Amino acid sequence: MKNETKKFIEKIKSAKSILLAAHKNPDGDALCSVLALYQLILLNYGIDAVCVYDGNVPDALHYVPLRGHARFYGHVDLTNKFDLAILLDYGTVKNIGGTFDAINNAKYLIEIDHHKNDNKIGNLCLDDDTAAATGCVLYDLMIDAGWKYDDKVLNLIALAILTDTGNFKYARDGRSLRIMAELVDAGVDINRLMDLLNNKPRKTIQTEAMVVANAEFFYRNRLAIAVVDSAAYKNLDGRGATALSLLAQIKGVEFIVLLKEQKENQIGVSLRSKSVPVNTIAEAIGGGGHMYASGAVVSDNLENVKQKIVQLFKGV
Ligand SMILES: [Mn+2]
Image (cartoon, rainbow, N blue to C red; front, side, top):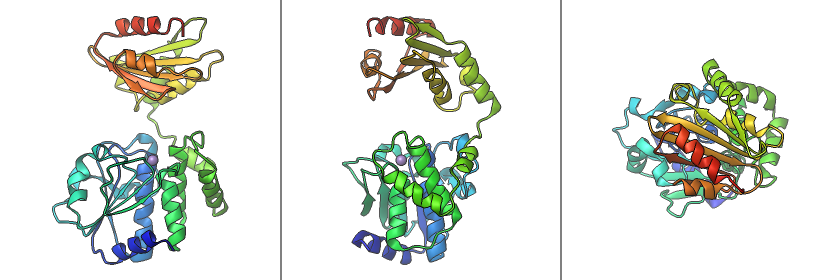
């Protein structure tokens, strides 16, 4: 057993109160890793840890196992110092949000993460920035510690990995797949987990379908631009990922732009490319991001932003 794992176990055993948290607006990896660790601590050490989050939990995660154990931090009494806080999948301090004080006030802080981070805050860091998900780091820890687990733990770890790797599209190497192979052999049903994530409100899907149906195409159909006006924006779940992915499935489309009227004269822009990098276009309108997925927020009206973007794609 690794020294860090031994230390981790010592800290759990000597704690009477434990707080678990992850980044603000938790995604599948953040929420499911917290809940899996909650269950592991309960099964192995009999401690009922407190799980908190800040922001919103996406509708898709409504039916993950033990969902009810994660509570909005504002509804939990956090005035007493916790003996131990464990912070998972947080990336950097500015992603933590409102749970920061309770985490920071704990007598001891352990972090479990897979993000690159030069300013770690844990007293003990069980980090692995080569892992595809925090769920993978947690799985390795569980095996190294020789902990008991149940089907809830296995399903939660599988959900963490599936969501953070985009169903393995972003798996950095074979490790996350090997872990999933172990999970499937132990009884995890991937198809059932995928169905469990289908919980979007009808209005959201209908809005995204309408946005796609009204998309416009430019430059021999290589550029698709879809517009979400302020009325439709209210029904959008998150960033409009379904609309982006549907447009990306159209033959010949290489660039996808989604314009979201967040409020009057404030347009959120999402840019995707299947071929050449488009982050320079996001930068040209004051945003940034990755080479093939970037974005910006522009202070202007929908029509002007659309015209500007069409021009910027000229010659790409
Ligand atoms: Mn993650």
